[in-house]
Image (cartoon, rainbow, N blue to C red; front, top):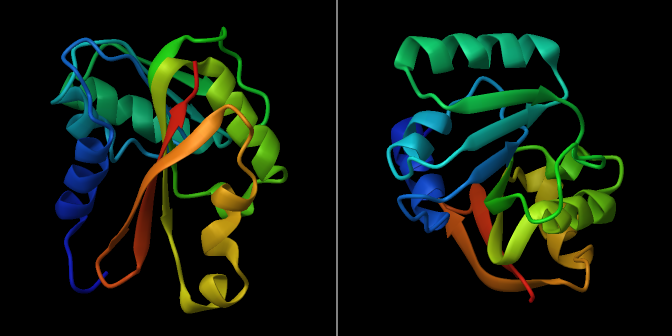
Length: 170
C-alpha cells in the first residue's frame, strides 16, 4: 500500500464510527481483526466480529487474546444472514468485502436489522480502477434498504478507499 499506512487507515475507520464509551459494535468481515484494537480503544462496550472464513476467525481470536481486547465475541457466518437480534448493536461496520457479497441489498438490510434505531452502519471498501469502471464503488448506495439513509461518504488516500456512513431511520 502506497501513500498511507495501515494504522492511518484503521484510525480513519474507527474514528468514522463515532463511538461512545459504551457503544456496542459488530464488524462484518472481521477477517484477522485488524480494526479491533482501534475500535476497542474507543469503547468498552461489547464487540462482535463475524466472518465467513473459519481460518480468519482463528487468527482473529489469537489477536484478541494476545492483545487482551475482551470482550470480543467471534461468529462464523455470512453478511446476508446475521445471527443476531434486531437492534443488538449501536454500530455495524462492513469492512472490505461488500462488492463480493452475493446479495448486497440483503446484507445491508441485515446490517440495518441488527442496528439500533438511530445507529450507524459504516461501509469500508478498497476500490481499484477496475472496480470503479465496473461501478462497484457505488454498490452500497445503489442497494440501500429504505431504513438506511446516507450521511457521509469519504474517499481516502487518493480514492483508493471509501468510507460510507449510513444511519438507521427510527
